Length: 316
Image (cartoon, rainbow, N blue to C red; front, side, top):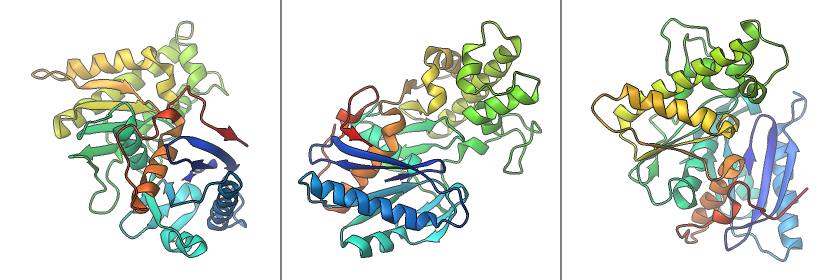
């Protein structure tokens, strides 16, 4: 299960690592609807679907944004899904009597990339999904770093322009303001751009719209600058970029790589690579966490069949 602010995405994953069946439902926006109960109901639906496929579930993995205490199996705080101190592991384990893993969505996505994706076989790397916000998996010595308060990787709130534009978090000049998909779109409209354009449309307009070009250039420069700081701090073997903004391909990657390298005077920049799994990364990571919780081996390459662009089972 991959629980997000817009949708909850669930999948039945087979022994060989292939998604055999998946379901996507809207996350409850109505404050009268209990999002935890919606999640539990979707788990029940998937459990029944697995049995109908002739599969007996061995474990359940649930990943969510926010502050996730993976050791306790508790989502401490996730504002966009209205979770606060939710003991997900206990609740779901009591529902099904199965081993349950609870993880952070971005850290789980990084696990997927390490096992079978762009960072396969690497013990030290960074992964940044560029979506509504920006967080990071910091993979050190083969383990994703959670931090003292389970908040490691909040790189979207690194100041890239000290004293710059205000961020919703209360700080100024945060990376998310300039280089997240939603932040880029908001800046374009705030500076007088055509209303209604999202980040993809802005990227497509850069050849004809000077404001779109300026906003895009600011975004790629801010991201490259942030990656230089992270490189000097953590010395990653590579940096993996995912999320909607990364779908722009060379239009994003080329200037980000150039900015990163130009900011590093005395060392070579790490490779900057696209995510292998795209939007499926957190879901595949959740399946890996579930398998580990069930005491089952996760061989290198497990789940690779679900990489972006490949057909991966049924959907409804």
